[in-house]
Image (cartoon, rainbow, N blue to C red; front, side, top):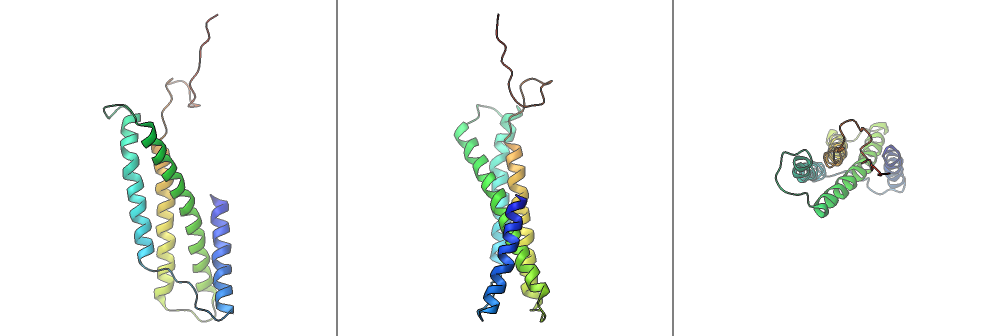
Length: 152
């Protein structure tokens, strides 16, 4: 994840530098982006809550493996995309702050809010992944794997 963040930071700063040096307008994130990222983060957590309840014995009924797999894959995708978007918005923020003529406070604020929103998405993806872990069956076994006993 940190590699994606570093790649995103370099890519974001490089993209802004190339756009500015070629005379085109730079990319400033819109206010809808951080709002959408936070909304997706909330949805991912809400989708993982029923799995958490079922795996810890607080819910009734069997666990649907297809639903659990889809939620885990969505959580992983959110974590990875959150890391990449956090890096991109960090690169944009660093570019905006290091310019000789500072842009309006609104553009820096939008870049920082996108950074915060993507960080929330990253955290929500990691939390949802953790919520979907099945606890070990043996209380003494910390590895999370089931032990098989062979009769001799």
